[in-house]
Structures are given as structure tokens and as C-alpha cells.
Image (cartoon, rainbow, N blue to C red):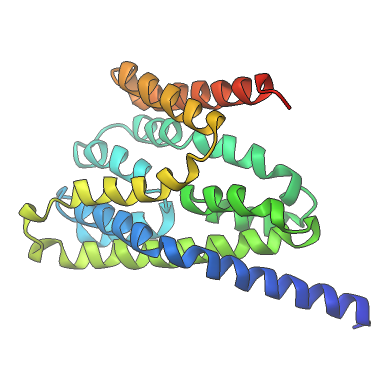
Length: 236
């Protein structure tokens, strides 16, 4: 290995470690969300081994929660699949935003990182990536993604295992909401961000009745569009 290649590898490893480190403050929120998902799955009536399998393979808390009543109710496979896809359409937006940094990677690495994309790792990447040189951003995102994947599964498995011993009075659903809010609030540091959040929130409530959780997708798109428009109209 020549000196230049060795330096590139060392830089990538340092960026990966930086990604791991930057996600540490979000660990309580990640674990709480995984715990809420695991408890909900265990208490849904889905056989425990199937719940473990779904949690491991799907790695998508909101889609798992949306699909649970359909699985328990023996809905057609196409209905379950379509529902999960609708809930997870936001990852198409995430992937489009990540395309500049991931497009040049080998296909195998793109598949691996695509599987690891999560809400919190994406938010943290968008928040910090501008301070990283382009050559190490993929490694940095990999570190963020690994640090999101492992705590979430830890929380999910703990929730699945301990569901029968956790009192309902603990209000885990509310705890999961607070965990997500703890990550969201620090990001509302600009007028476009606040605008996008307000538009998405109002639209999400107004469109909550749409089938297959389509209101969530529409609200997300409206929020992004609103933020982009406000950012474009701001004086430079």
C-alpha cells in the first residue's frame, strides 16, 4: 500500500470513529425508540421468534408498528408490504439527499449503507457533514449508521424480552415520543427548519386519515418543499 492510499484509509477510519462518537448523545433516544418498538411487537400477539426476526430484518420501527396489526390480523401479504413501503417512503428522500456522497461507492457498499439508513443517522449526517471533506463523508456516514443500528437493536431486543415485565403505567409510547423530540428540537435553529417542521406537523395532523399512512409521506414532502422555498426567498 502506497503512502497516499494509507493516508486515505487512516482518514476514513478516523471519520468512521468520528461518526460513532457524534451519535453517542443520541443513544438514549435511539434505545428508547427501539425499546418502544420491541415492547409493542411483543405485546401485539405476534409469536416472539417472528417478532425477533422482523425486528432484525426490517430495521424500521415505524414500518414495523404499522405492519403489526396487519400481520396479527392475517392481512394479505400485498397489503402488509404496501403499508410498510408507504410508511418508509421517506427513505427515498433520504437516499436522494445522500446520493452525492454514496453514488461513487461500489454496489455492495451502497447496498450495505442503504440498509443502515435511519432517521437519526440521516439527521446527524445532514447536521454535521458540511464540516467534513467530501472524501471521508461516506465513512463518516457509515460510523453514524453503525452507531444507530446497534443501540436500536439493543433497545428492541430488550423490549421484546422484557415486555411481559414492564408495567403499562410506565408510558413507553410517550417516552418514545419524547426521545424523538429530544433529537428534533436542537435542529430547529433556522427559519427554514422551523417553517418546514410547522408545515409538516400541520399537514400530518390534517392528513392523518389518509389510507396506508400516506398522510405522513405527503406531510413530509410539503414540509421539505416549504423549507426549500423559505430558504430560497431569504436574503443572501
